[in-house]
Length: 106
Image (cartoon, rainbow, N blue to C red; front, side):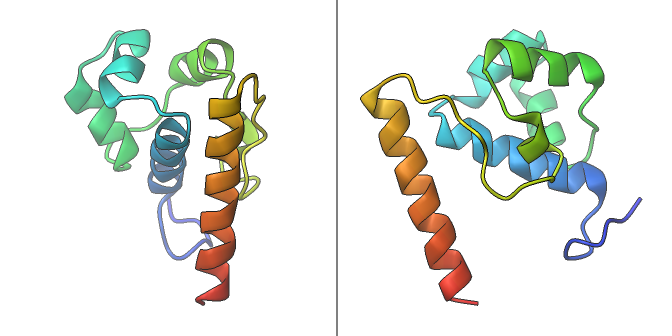
């Protein structure tokens, strides 16, 4: 099923947002895959939109990694992140700066 965002499928948008969130939070693919009880390759396929994000994985993301599911599902461009330490705060600021730069280059 295609969405209206740049002609990507819903699974591709969700996968891209998942990958962006994972990197923003400094999580390795292996770490998230272990929490999902799947292989790194299976998570790679989810991030590339080849496989969908199941409700079980969404639940794990929300509860284990405090992930903003509105961001993952494409409802917002900036994730709502609970910054608990300086490392989290610097990641969020760096991500916001990258978003601003990307939008100004369009």
